[in-house]
Each structure stands twice: as structure tokens, then as C-alpha cells.
Image: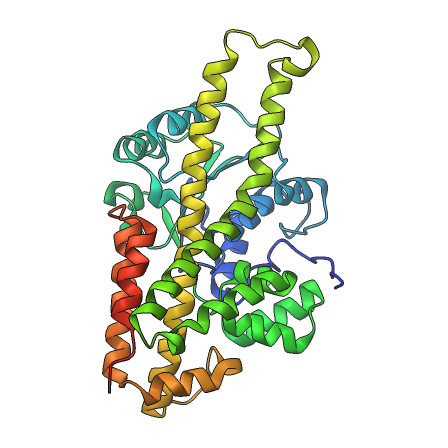
Length: 387
């Protein structure tokens, strides 16, 4: 797989022509604001848009956003001194973290341009954290720019969103995603088409599928589930398999990071060199393990959530086939499984099934229902009706 160099900072924003035009103008000084709110569905590239805009604001060339100067390169790489990106591996962003960010935002930039503060997942701000952030946005310093990212404007306090300039992103089309994979990552056209459809417009997911055969195999296992839900035993087995495969994938993501953090902690406290542990070491280890446990839980929920959206795509396809709707299926590769779901159910039932999947999702993400319990209940509800 070959990779083509990015020409400008905007090239990774797939299918976002209107937003790019607005951000280009702002970076050139037309319509600039002290605070921006990037909204859009998962995979639309909210964080990428914020980072690209930050790079353009720091760019040394004209028009801003060349993608090759030192400022653009370091901003895109996450190492620019005046671009701070806050992302959390926890279920929420707390007030202490925001207060530290606010203190940093009050400092003058190291360079000649802007101090840029990007908050990914701003919808995860706690109430106290949101209030702390509001004060900073209400009383901005002259050379500080805030960029908040959230799925919708309703995910933030009205007092915060009213002080931000809104940048709305949309889900790119399958064709746009496939073209990007071919152009930017050198992916084979047939594979790019499959990944674009399977990701349902989610750029990050499409790239992950294109790069990892294991990810593609895990998805195939998930989308083959609906046709197999013919008995209570098959439902329980499907739930258990989904719990195990999602946990395995989440562990692959977090395991290496956990090990690296432990090595860094040991080095910071001189455990390896001195051969002994200072008094402060035990509390630090305890805090690290607590943070890692929280991150692992969120990562597992993220993987489960993505799998549930893959299940939704199968029932969506079944509704499309049953009603004669036009357009390509998301899961064309398992057309026979989709046809089996159509044969054993109705469009109305499959619509209700989609609703049940979203209810299970809410139970896990919002009400902390244990994943195995929620998935067992869901699979039983999805079981094909007895005829």
C-alpha cells in the first residue's frame, strides 16, 4: 500500500467543501472568531477539521494551509508549541483538566500567531468543567482561539454554543470516501469501495478496515449475526461471541499503551536505575491503574458501539430490499444473509429491531448496564420469529 503526500491541510477533509471554504476564509482573516464549534456525525472528521484549521492559522505561507511549511507540519503532527489538543480516554472531561487548559490559554503564544486550544469530545465535559470553560470563552485573550468538537450543538451548554461560530460537517458519500482511500492511501479500488460502504461514511473506520484484514474479518463476523439468530441458544452464543471479540479488540488497542505508560512511570521514578521504589511510587501506580481501567472500559464500549452500528446496517439493508429502495447495499457481500433476514421478517419488524439496538446502546453508554447483560437481552429480542 503506497501513500500519496497530502498537498494541503484541507485534503483530509473528505466531502466537506462548504466547511473548507468557510475555514479557508477565516484563516485568511475573513470571518475570524475567538471560538469555533465543529459539529457533525461520527466519522465526519470534526477533530481533523479543527486540527487542519489550527495548522492553517499557524501557516507561514499564503494562502494559509499549505501543508508543507514547518508550522503546518508540526501542527498536523501534534507537536506545535501553540496548538493544544485535549482528548480523553475517560468517560468524561473533568473540571481540573479544563482549569489547567484555561490557565494555559491565558499565556501568550510562543510564536507570532495564535494560541489554539482544541477540545475533542467537548460533549463529554462535566457540568463543572463546562462552566469553567464558559468563563474562558466569555473573556478571551486577544490571541487565543478555542475550537470545540461535538456531535451536535445540543451537546453543549446554550451559553457556550452561543459564543462560538458554528462549523457543520456532514457524512461524506461512499464515492468520496473510496476516492480518498485510493488517492491518499493507495488502496486498491475494489477494497476501497468495500471499506467505504462498510464504514458508512466514517473516514477513520474506513482507513482502519483498509489497513487491517483482522478488522475486516471481525466486521464480517458481526454482520453475519442476524441470519444466525434462529434459537435461544444461538442468541446467547452470539452475545458471548460479541462480548469476547470486542473485548479482544479493545485489549489489543489498550494493552500496548498500558505497558508503555508503566515503563515510562518506572523510568520517571527511577525504579529501574535505583532498584527500589520511592514512597511516592505506590500512589502514582494506583492512579495510573485507575486511569487505565477507565480508559479500557471506554475503549470496550466504543468497540461494542461500532459493532452495534454494523448490526444496524444489516437491518437497514433488509428494509431497503423489502421495500424495493434503490441504491447499493452497505453489506452487498452478504446479500444472501440479508435476503434470509428479509424472508423471515418484515420491514416493520426490522425497523423495530433497529430501535432495540439503539435502546441497548443507550443502556450501556448512558445507564452503565453491563455489556454482557445488555447484549444477551438484545440478541434475544433480535431473534427471528418462529413460523
